[in-house]
Image 1 (cartoon, helix red, strand yellow):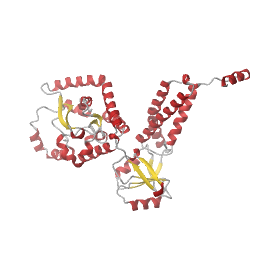
Image 2 (spheres, rainbow, N blue to C red):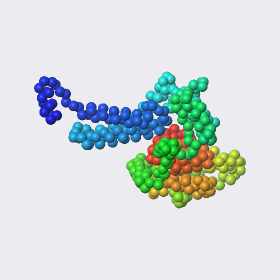
Image 3 (cartoon, rainbow, N blue to C red):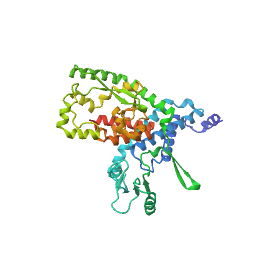
Image 4 (tube, rainbow, N blue to C red):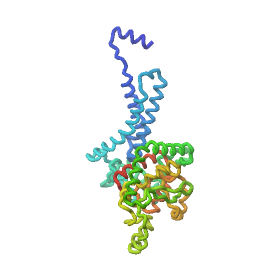
Length: 413
């Protein structure tokens, strides 16, 4: 019927042929914009990584919805699946990057600024809010503010409720941290039990899912195997370099480390220290401050055992490249807590079952959040947080931040 109608209309009017590629682009764009709006990307202020996750999710959903609609229709010949995949990938990559530059520009000219007041004694919390142009918050100069932030970690329920009631009339929005610390509630399911007026948070241990374990392991193997043409030659070159510097020294250094569930394994690294370390007792005697530093950080400030080649390998993190072999052996993962030494198990204490519940990784939160500049106890807390809040997205963020850290050589020692 539609074809007959077109023939009749063509006798009197010039009816244009529908460009299905144009309709495809418009459909993708409208669907994508709608989903972004549903997730609050246009109305709320999120940090870069959280907003990027929403953009990627929106891209995937719009791609899935559009693909399903086109496959159910009768115009399968007018679109290209490869074009759809390309659109999905470009939106997931280009939009977050472009938003970084756009928000920096808008913040610089004052169009991406929002006044905020913060109730907290935590200076790190204030810095996280006011030093991030992506959020766009600036300190209110007087009592007037649009957003109120409350750090409620050290507040009791009654005090928190009173602060909210005193400010809710004059604040456009109130944002407060949950009393329970150490959990990523952005991935929690939140729903309201209306009859009792109670909000319920559902936290999920995603590492207990067999599917998640399979996906994580598959990604590890795929990335390592696919990149072997890059890291394989690098391994060989570094091996020759080490032998040239110290012909009698070993190429690899292996040490027993704690794996998943406390199972011990040999962790491989390039040797970065002199083979002869007989001078260390005398050196420690002359440098008591180094011994005190080691008690806190489990490292020395100026380690005399490190060779010139080893110093370069450590700064670039290339000394850890042989751990890709541990990944292929199933003993380690690309992302996870750094493998602890066997003697450190007693220092981990009661948190050991949580830290050792996941495979150790080549890189993790410790590397991208300060590297060796943080203390041992804080490192343990980071590893516990990783285990309790594991997700594929968090692994992706850590991997990207690791690349940035290595290229910037920040924090590595």
